[in-house]
Image (cartoon, rainbow, N blue to C red; front, side):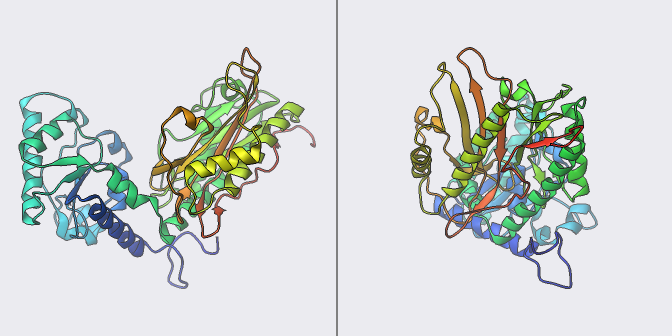
Length: 433
């Protein structure tokens, strides 16, 4: 990173909030045209942020009801009514002319409670939306809706004569290709988590719990400028909790000497843009030969995954290239035969730690009818791999996992994260290693 994290008056920095708002809004309108919808009813908080509106209370993600109405070719979306002198009116001046929607529901239970009051609320919402559709001459066109709605919503919109369709593909298409400002925000979020992994690996020692280490990571993220930690965020697994059972959130388990510790610090936000950042270390003793072997395998396929990401190839071609390069050794035999299991894949990343868009196909893709998807420049992807071992009866005690995030460039893949992962790091040792 050449520059600091925030805009200043003395130099032109990459991240430009106004330019980013315009880019995202233009993408959303272009995607609406592509998919043939006249408007979008948005409930997803990440889509709020994408189209220029923000909710500062993250708990509201669990209390859906507030929505935006984005009319094709009409600039920023209509949003909840706000008056001069109120917080939202003053803080988001680009939305002042659009703060008009009156019929919002804020209580989560209203999505599912079946009584006259609830039905009446949704009927008012549908009629208000219909009035704006008529005003903008799109009342006869399909209207997309993204998520977080109940059956009352569908019934009310149908009764109002609104042709409701799935709007998730509209927003997925818009959000898949990132601008230079979005890329810089994701890169900056990664630099915050680099400091968190550093603080965890400095502090970790036998006797600590997974919860304690998550706490150290969280403090380091906020100290480093994180906006929020999307919860539950951090995966923290020690010893057999990953080796035998797979990844999970942290618990009060005490870490013992010689165990592997795997942590994913994900969902950390800078200007809304997230992280997904696995690292593995060995705690309180020198790594065994087996631990070093599975970690080296992890690194080998992690690097191959990153090296094989190219613009213009499909996700199927990408997977085939990995299979050819690994010559069958990387993905191992199928259960219950003994052998190593490489859990490799990846997803999009942006305003969500699992942004909408194509996945880097896992090796089990033959189990699913996953269509090929073309990898494009300025997609932000998260190649990740975990290695576990099955002896024919049970999973081994030890396992490893790594993950990076980067952007598809003209020629390949640029990794954002700089925290070391080439060799297994030993932490909390009483002597030298």
